Image (tube, rainbow, N blue to C red; front, side, top):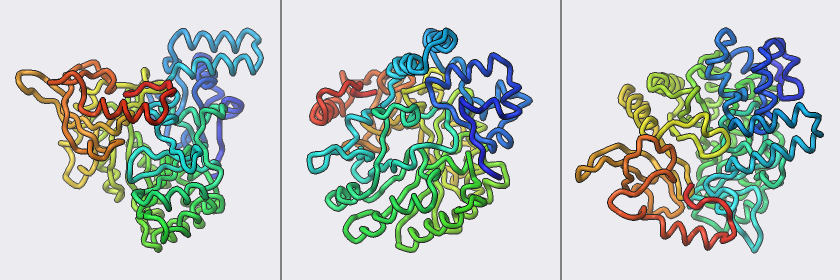
Length: 445
């Protein structure tokens, strides 16, 4: 299949999208001016059930919905679009709204970007001791955009909101000094939107310097398997990309494709099954992850089905996340207690081979906080929490407790149990102030 992309400027050229009701087209245009919108012909033709598109989870996954913006924000954009405002005026209205949507949650911009030799290392994040994230500049787009994406600021045309590295040479210098780093994650955007030739220009310096660094695992974060599996089967350089994967493995490096599957239907097409086989034939492993959301997958039966399908395709279930506190979170979010119920029911209904998955997890400023359970201690109902990853590795796996709150949907809405503060708060405050005292982001969100 030849790739065809649809965005705000051309989506009405598609026969199906052109015939959507006016209300749906208005929602796409209004919300799509604030939050990024892009779909493609594979999603439209093979994943969405157009006979029931209003309630279809893949439609909600890819297409803007009116309720993704607060009513006053929606009306502001609608008025700007319809009252003859210039493109610049519309852009400014949208930017003002974006600034209220917590565009860089969890300290990404001010806490995660390292300084090296006195300079900010653009295109790099180093939050957890062993893992560095690299954002190759040529890969800061996707085959299509998830409507829930917490990295939506990468795609809205505002340079100050983007992470992007022009090349990997500064990264290599950093890795040679920071031998504690064993894993590098190529992320975005989606690195698999790059050609094999361009991707190799970012990758080769990493491979050429293995003897001088401590890199043992290379991860590639991608949605291509679910949004454009042809990338690994019939694209003109698909074989070249697979040979790159093989070359990584042959160097003794663990290659992990971090695949995002949000719904079982994304695993059902013949082309995605073929793509998975081809990737696995290179020696790479595929690990799968997804947030849990209203409108898309807030059903334990669905999660159990998804994990089984992934394991049957020899993929490894890895994470269930909570909706990040950014963008359209209010549209998608479910409570912590509901997420735990969904995870527990799904987890308990699958075999042990599926139980590699962890969650539900909140990727918040201090680290990845997993909800281990809901319990009663000293006659008080509490959430049992622990860090899967943390800014201080000493925090990892240490249990702590929060007062039970059936409405809370993020860690900043929780109150400590049996104490006046969580055990990590004082040290987190020191980290926060030592990194950037002028950072305006919330310390614990």
